[in-house]
Image (cartoon, rainbow, N blue to C red; front, side, top):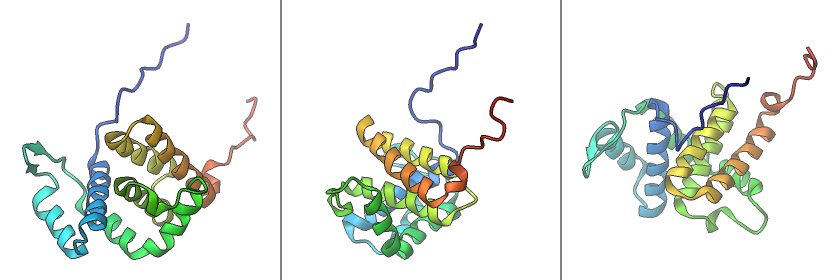
Length: 169
C-alpha cells in the first residue's frame, strides 16, 4: 500500500523571505511603470507596506533587508540581468515586450540565481513561480518556470546534475 501525497492547492503560505520577494516584485513594477526613484520606492515599501495594512489588505511581515537587496540588486545589475533573461526567453519575445509584472518577476528571479548562491536554485524558481501564479494564469506561471529553470540549470549546473553513483543502491 502506498501513501498518497497530499496535493498542494495554490501557493504555499509566504514566509518572510517569500513576502520580501513578492514586495520586491511589486516595487520593481512600480519603478518600471511609474518612473519612481529607487530611494522613494524603498522608503515607501519599508515605511508603509511591509507588514502593514494597505487599503484594507494586510501585507505579510517581510525580511526588509532581503527585500532591499533584491530591489537594489536588480536595479544595479539590470544591464547584465536583462540579456540573460532575454536569452532564456522564446525567440521573438524580447523582454521589453512582456508585461511589466512579468518582467519584474523574471528580473528578480534572475538576480537571485546570479547573486544568491546560498539560496538553492530550485527554491528560487519555485518562489517566483508561486508569485507568478498570484498574478497570472497557469500558462504564464509555466513560462516563468521554464525561463527561470533554464537559467538556473545554466548558471548552477552542479545543483541540477544527477548523481548516478547511488543508482540501484
